[in-house]
Amino acid sequence: MATYYERGDGQVEATVRVAGYPPQRKTWSSKTLAKQWAEPIEAAMRAGTWQEAETKGLTVRAGITVYKDKIAPRYKDVSEKCRICDVLAKEFGDYAMAHLPSAAIAAYRDRLRARGLGASTVNHHINQLSAVYTGLVKELHYKLPVNPAKNVMRLKPPPARKQRVKQEVIEWLVAANQASNKTRKKLGGRPPIGEFEPWLRLALESAMRRGEQAALLIENVDLEAQTAELPDTKTGDSRTIALSSKAVECLRKVIGTRKSGKVFTLTKEGFKTAYRRARQDAAREHPEVKRIRYHDTRREATSRLAKKLDIIELGNQTGHKKLDTLRIYYRPDPAEVAKKLG
Image (cartoon, rainbow, N blue to C red; front, side, top):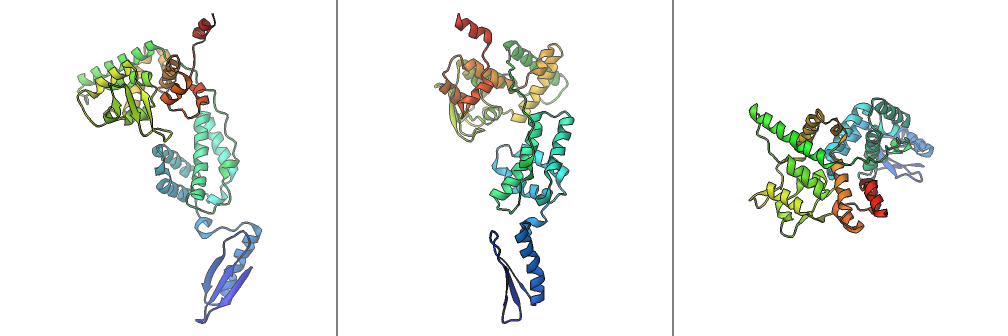
C-alpha cells in the first residue's frame, strides 16, 4: 500500500509497498501530487503490469544498443552477433521491449523463410533476439516482464550434412587458387600472400577450425614434438593437438625462419574470400565443387582421423566437449565399414 510522510520542510515523501515488488519512493511538494504519483503505481503493481522507469519506455532499438555495447563484446563472435542485432533493430526497433508481441516475431520468422533463408539461419535470428532479452535481464538486471522470443517456435533444423571431401576436390581448389594468383600478377594487382594451399591442407590434416588456424601462434607450435597449443578456442577451453608429418610440412612452409607472431599472415576473412573465389573458379570445370563448403573439410578431417585415433583422442583433437557430437562430423565410408565386416 502507499504511505505518505510529511517532512518538516513542507514536502511529502510517498512510498509504495506491494508484495513482490521493490519499494518505490519519491518526494513531492504536496500530498495531492504524491497521491497522483503513488496510486497509479500501486494499482499497476497489484494488477501485475508495473515496470520500473528504466524499462517502461525502453524500445527494442535502445535495448539492442545497450546489448551491443555492454554484453556482445564478451563473445568471440561479437561481429556476427552485432550484424544480426542491426537487422533486428531495423525490424523491431520501434516496439517497446515490454510489449513486443510474439506474433510479430513469428511473422518475421516466416518472412525470412519465405525469402529462402535456411532454417538454421532463421533460428539464429530468433535466438539472438532472445539473447538480447536474456542478457539485459540476467547481466544488467533490467526488469522486463517477459522474453517474447521464448514463445516462438523454432524451425526444424536440416539434417546434418554428410558431405565428404575427396582429395581430387582439394587439388582442384588449389589449382584454381594458383591460377587466380597468376592472373592477379599479370593484371598488376596486389601480390597474393600464397598461404591458401598450406592453410587448406593443414585443415584437412588437423581438423582445426578456421578461427583456430587464423589465431595460431608460432610460439605455440613445436615442430619437433609435432604439437600445437590452441589457447583460445571456440569453446573457451585451451587444448593441445597432435600434428601429422604432413601438417608439420605445411607449417614449415608457412613459418619459414620466423620465430614469433601468427603462423598465417592471411586473415580468417581473407581465407574465406580466397576459398569462395577458388570454389567459383573450380566449379566452371568441375560443377560438383559448388556444393563443397569450407566447413566440410573439418568433417572430412575428423572422418580421416577417426581411422587412426580412439574416440577420446579424436575428441581432444577436434575440441568437442561432448563426444556424442562427433557423430555429426564423423562420416565413415560404408564401403570401408563393409570390408571390416568381411
